[in-house]
Amino acid sequence: MRILSGIQPSGTLHIGNFLGMIQPMLQSQEKGELFCFLANMHSLTSVFDPKHLQGYTNEAMLDLLSLGIDPQKSVFWVQSDVPEVTELTWYLNNVTPVGLLERCHSYKDKVAKNLPANNGLFSYPVLMAADILMYQSNVVPVGKDQKQHVEVARDIAIKFNQMYGEAFTIPEPRISDAVAVIPGIDGQKMSKSYGNTIDIFAPENQLKKKVMSIVTDPTPLELPKDPDKSVVFAIYRLFATPEKTADMEQRLRKGGYGYGDAKKELFSVLWDYFLPFRTKREELAGNLDYVAEVRKAGAQKARAAGTPTLDTVRRLVGTAR
Ligand code: ADP
Ligand code: TRP
Image 1 (spheres, helix red, strand yellow):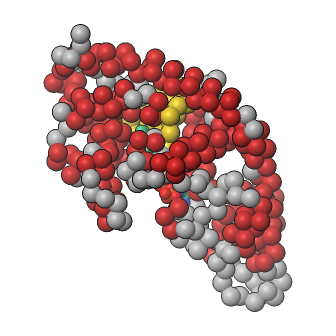
Image 2 (cartoon, protein in one colour; image 1 turned 90 degrees about the vertical axis):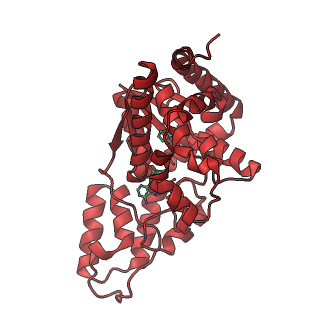
Image 3 (cartoon, helix red, strand yellow; image 1 turned 30 degrees about the vertical axis):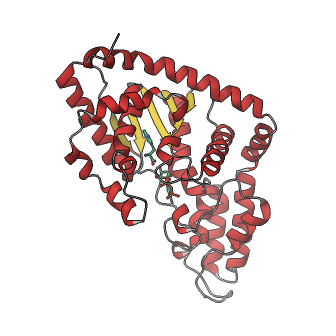
């Protein structure tokens, strides 16, 4: 079973991304054949500074490799390193009804958030369909917001197969609802667009500052507190051992234990949790030649896996030599 996962390098990864996306992806690396790529051509719909795009891409390479993407087990590459995907996008464009794209919520949402209403943003789902179909993916794990895009890829694949003949595996979205939405330091959903994130690889003083600024209610120190209403506890329980979690829960309920102390414990748990990953990341950052090799080898593997599909499509549509 081939599992395909795409991540836009468009900002710094936070602990919501880690639990909501990266951890499930690492689990699928153990279960099936994982194809994982950095969707930097999709990032072009929102990142217009070339230095930022380069930077986010390089950082995301280091992030994912240090968090556990294993280039021996999985195919890991940067989308633009296999530009053939844009050729496939063009073939797909010509079987994609405009109405199908007009129904996509994501386009309207992004325009409402002031992203420019250009054709790249509008046809974003067609490039995403090409990503999925080029590699004959069976399963695409996505958050709820991306489910419609995988359905568009299915519709396009079915239409193409009917019009021209069998070229594509019909992919299935897999919605992970195992992990709840992680709250940010203000209690809303953690998201880079709300500026309320706790970043995975934040330096010590910055991590401390973020944790210390998590919202709390004004219950005085001596009074009992409801752990279910505490953002500090909601995050703590996701990273602490069951014993430590039960212990903090009890202390909050009992009273005489303040949020300041709870935050210090949360900081310490987060710092320790990501320690091995930080060490790995530092090692990789000191060995960028190796990272460049990994990037190159990943693109080669992805190209080898995708080229047969493209050859079939060229033959079916009539552009093959
Ligand atoms: P952001 O909201 O920070 O822009 P993205 O929309 O780029 O993050 O999300 C990338 C992935 O991370 C998605 O799979 C999404 O489901 C997951 N994710 C993002 N924020 C959270 C969160 N607060 N809790 C759980 N998962 C999240
Ligand atoms: N659109 C996805 C996101 O923003 C990223 C992505 C691009 C993707 N191509 C993909 C995800 C193909 C899965 C499959 O999260």
